[in-house]
Length: 114
Image (cartoon, rainbow, N blue to C red; front, side, top):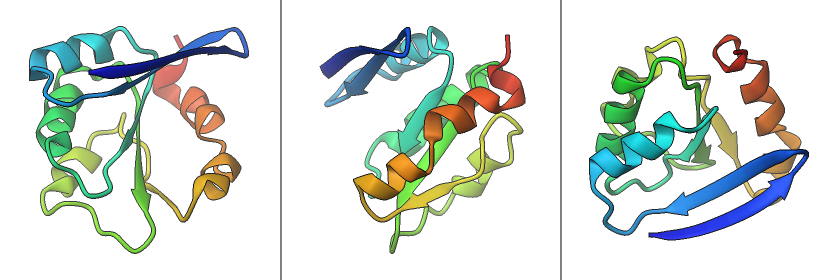
C-alpha cells in the first residue's frame, strides 16, 4: 500500500493506492473519510472494493471518475443506484479534473454535510 498525505485548505488529504490490501482494510479506511473519490478507469479489484464500501457506508458520499473513452465495468449500475454515489464524472486529463471541482461537488452533496 502506497500513500500520499497532504494538508490543503485546512483538510488532510490521504491518497491511497492499494496493491493488495484486504477488503476489510479498505472499508475501514473509507469509514474514516468524509468522502471518497474513486477512479474506476480500467479497474482490477476496484469493483469488488467499491461495491463493499458503498453497501457498508451510506454516510460516506462517493464520487466516481472515469477517463474519457472508457466505459464502466458491467455491474457498475449496481453501485450507481445508491443515492450517496454521485453522478459519474468523465475526464480527459488532469486539467479537466481540476475544472470539475471534485472536492466542492462532493462537499456540497447532501451526504457530506454532517
